[in-house]
Every structure is written in C-alpha cells, then in structure tokens.
Amino acid sequence: MGEGAPGLQAAAGRLAARLLHGTGLGRRGLVETQIAASFPDRDAEWVRTVGADCYRHFGEEVAMLASGRRGVRRALARVDGAAAVDRLRETLGENQAAVIVTGHIGNWELAGAYLASAGVPVTAVARRQRGPLGGRLHRLREGLGIDVIDHDAGAGPVVRALRSGRCVTLVADQHAYRGAERIPFLGRPAWTRLGPARLAAAARVPLAFGALVRDGTGYVAEFRVLPDGLVESGDPVTVTREWVSYLEQAVRGRPEQYFWFHRRWKNPPRRAGR
Image (cartoon, rainbow, N blue to C red; front, side):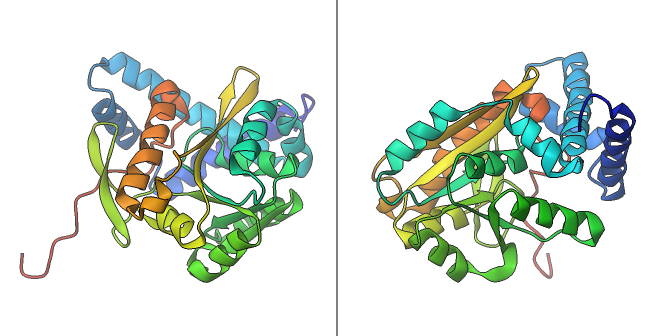
C-alpha cells in the first residue's frame, strides 16, 4: 500500500480493530491485565501506553497485509535480515531443513515471506481462517512462495516436508492443553505445545527460533538455532523451554509488538465432579 492510499490504510486498520473485537480478543481490559502481570515493576500509565501502542502496531501490520502482494513486497524491501539468514543457512549446513518456531511477535506472516524471498524453501503450518479474508490470506502466502500445510493435517506431511529439505515454520505460543506442558513465560507458567520440539526430533533436523519485528520505518529479522545436541536429547520440555526463553527476550524488548489479545495464561479445565 503506497503513500497515495491513506484512506485504504486507515480502513484496513479499522477493519483489524473490528475483527479483534468481534472475536472477543480485543478487550482493552484483557490486554492491560496481561501486560501488567507480565511487567509487574511497571506503573499503570506505562501499561496503558503499551496497550494503546499494541493496537496501533497490529492495525498497521494488518493494513500492510491487506494491501496484497505488492504491499508486502514493499515491506520486505525494508527488512534488515540478510546477515541473519546467512547465519541461519551456515548453521543448518548442507540439508538446510529446520523447524523454525516463533510466537505472535512483530509480524510473523512477514517473517515467513522474508525467508521465502531470500530463497529459503518455506512450508508454513497454519490454521485455515474462515471466510473471504481467510482465503485471501491463504492465497497471499502461496503467492509469496510459501507452501502451506493445514494445522490439522497431522505430523506426517510436516515430517515429509522437513525430510525433503524444507524449513517448516510454526507459530506456537497460543494456549493449548493437548500435547502441551506448563512452560515459564514472562514470570508465569503457560501451557505451551511441545509439537515443534517433537517434530524436529522426529525428522532429525535443528530447531530455530525466528522473529521479525518492526524497527522504525522498517523491520529487523532474527533467527537463533538452538544449541547442538539439545533437540537430539529427546526431551521436548527442555527444548520448548529454550525457544520460549528466546521469545520472552523478544517480547521484553518489544512489548507493544506482542499479541496480548489472546488469553495466554489459563488454568487447566476442571475435571468432572470437581
């Protein structure tokens, strides 16, 4: 979306806000409560400012994605990440396959698109969103060179993609009970999926944390491969703790760019009769 389309950008931003509120995720009280609990040393004014900046950040990012491939490619041209991709490739070695896990920080859609634009074969595991906007997002991913595997397809297609030399990307920080453990995150235990660690172990490939965050008028990309031997240890909880600690560092550095709209910390469901 160019400088000559401010009306479209503003409309897309308003649409993002309506979508957030329409799904029950956009309540300001939830956003501020989670920020305050994650940063207990900060005062109420700081919490309100970060919350307001969070809405602004995601409104702008959704507006950029809504502009389609042309707007996304303009954004990709403003990413500082060539050195990070070179280090990733060097660390991965000849096969180049890896599980790359991230959280809802910065712009995770743009992160996958950036890897694909740099020539990295990317397969994204994602839930298919409903409605015309979901279809548009799916087509946008494919148009940017990203293969997509549905989140509910099971491990088989993902392992095959990894064994064929592709990097598989997952956004794995939403609350879950099935296949999850309580992992420390921002000072409190949060139910976190162990799937990325188990996939990397099953395919015998490295696991890396990746993030792409806004920095001024552009973006900065980061990729950190977990230490040698950690995935091979066969302990998915230890592996998950490691990548979550990287996500935590990213959130502490850019709290206004984290997706505070989802309920990250929940208690286990009550058992029958309790």
